[in-house]
Length: 181
Image (cartoon, rainbow, N blue to C red; front, side, top):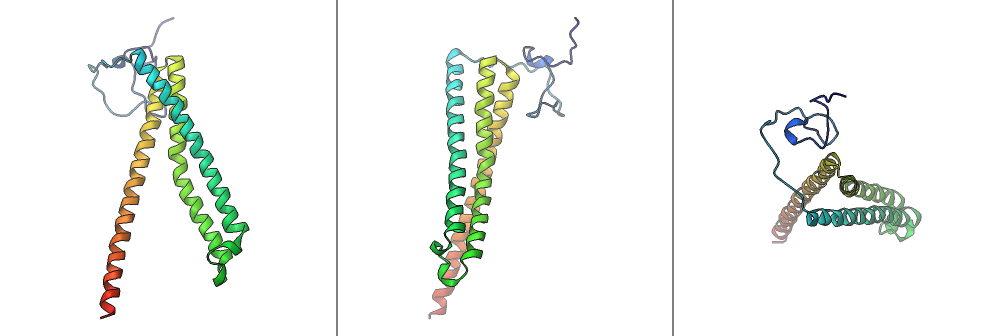
């Protein structure tokens, strides 16, 4: 049986196999065919990666459970116990409870994707180590990259939001102080 040079084989050196994206499709960018990876994983590196896979899956599962418990707990608080709502005295308890619940579900949805990607990283990393599969390893690191990129962007957004809150709070205090003179 003849081997096709363009056929993907994870055991081939990097310069002979087509570049794959995280989705298993060939990348559209041009690569340097003379590039040769000199990176080798030692047995200790593999054991560290095996432990990282376990901990990332554990943290992701705890994250999924935490999201579920938060949504259920807040759902109970806002929807099933409206008299306990801080808005009960104003008569806005049902609307405010529902709006608060939807807002909180949105925030939990923001946390779902990075936790999912962390779980997929751990799962693919374990498969890559167990099967000695470079394609699974690439996929695992692709999910880890997505996880860190998303969390980084989310942190930047929150920092900007906190900065705006601080600036507007200071401006509000300044205007309030000027109004009392």
